[in-house]
Image 1 (cartoon, helix red, strand yellow):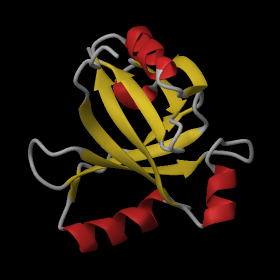
Image 2 (cartoon, helix red, strand yellow):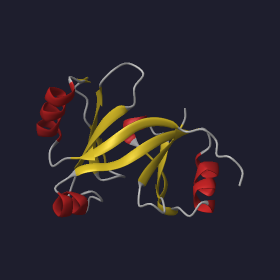
Image 3 (cartoon, one colour):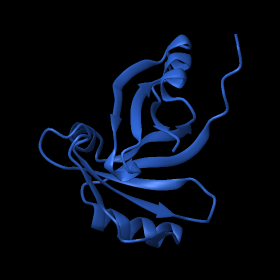
Image 4 (cartoon, one colour):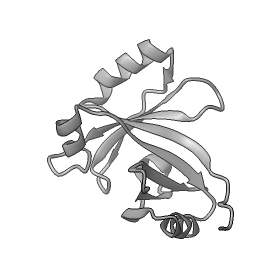
Length: 139
């Protein structure tokens, strides 16, 4: 099997009921910083915000449902929130999706633009090991 292109860990996503309450807890626990920005994404049906623990490290994304049909609402209700996904930034979104599919991953959501990433597209994959992976195309 051909080696995969290297992936860059962009962020780890945690589902929370409410951004502000979740943010205060994460800042206190991790000594992290937050720029105060909350992004509302009508295509993804979520609100998100990012924490930074140290320059150069992967970010921590807090994700809250934005409406009753949000894709993370069920995760929040069934699991009480928590660790949800890892996000890798990739050079070629379609190629990375094909590579992951060839290794048994399933496409959960096809590429769509994301507000929090200035319209860059994201896609969602689920690995055989049940790891939810968000793929973010590079600028």
